[in-house]
Image (cartoon, rainbow, N blue to C red; front, top):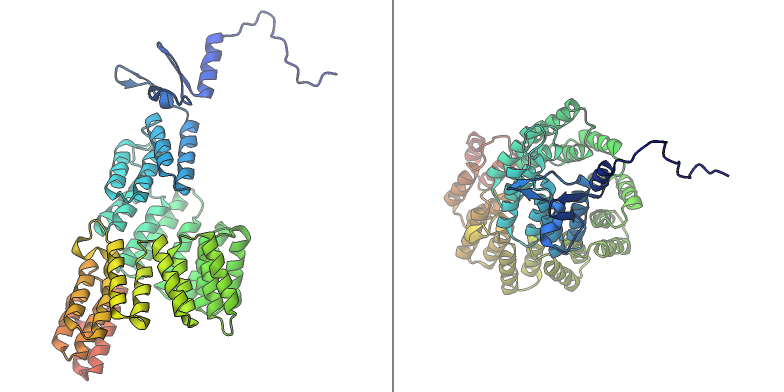
Length: 498
């Protein structure tokens, strides 16, 4: 019986156009044909044939199928996840040679360079991509602009990062990542108020609606975090988290931050539900396991064995996560096991050399339970490991917390000159480091150097141009408390007029 799958005979008098058939086959298979021969984009032998890109009199002929670049960038991302940087670089370079106008290859090569600690190389790839890659409407690639902004922010070039985020948002107003990065930069590092970040998130929400695009769970999650952590508005934050989860029920970041917020509010059952929900579809999420363990450790009459088991699961899921080592060590220290805490911090600094908070926690542990010489050695190693290429003599903003903790150590040891030098280095690394300002002024006030303490406060307050910033408010409060402790009530009243 006829199954209907037999090839039908050609109609009488019909002719097959062989030239047209070959063109169709070549287009499907990604093959380029020239007068000198046939080139396949999958040929890995001759470097001249890689990507099947042909030129005639200096003019590039056509563009390859997007599918071929998709394959190369996919394998490049896969190689980066496995830390096989040479293979990833090869894949992305082939993709760039195949289509120099595809921004994904420049972004991938930048990530490879960053993994190799080559900041200048990463910056160069992104700038080349911005010069080459344009959208159909002639606008620049917002993904590359935003990625370069992130790179500059990590390097400490905050003004340059802000201008790049703004440029990305102008090129594509519905680009959610640019608005989120801009909001977080302004509220976290530029010490601007909650309203500065809120405006960015509201604009992102509006632009997505105008573009006819669905709402972004990423925007709602970041917005909720701002309202909770900076604004103290738990009700609004909870509503925004629910909007994020309504858009994407499997948004791990939203569940995680909602769980952390419920933990802070001591709603243990709600927090547990959040963490357990994530683990049903993302069992190896080390950050969720870490937050879950911290929640268990903070519960009244909590089971320490359960918390330790969760920390161990987090390390098994990602043994390179420095944050897990730090949280685990602090919990073990709370239980009274100083040697185990020290070992965890030492292991953490071995797998994540640039995790400044790990070095700080280890140095503080040695300050409290070890010797001053051991603590100094830890702080020095941490500064050497975390120093940024453009951080100057103080090592950049990543080292500020280490200089501050070192200054506290020297003040405790009674070496005021060394303490002043460390505090000064901390403020050189990060002029808005509130912890360094308050620690330094506390030391000077205890030495009855009230004029020096006031000078340090007044100089630090000038670093915060916005009167509504959280940093300036914190400094005002600390300054007022110092004057009250010293019995200077009239001076305390005049502080907020500065």
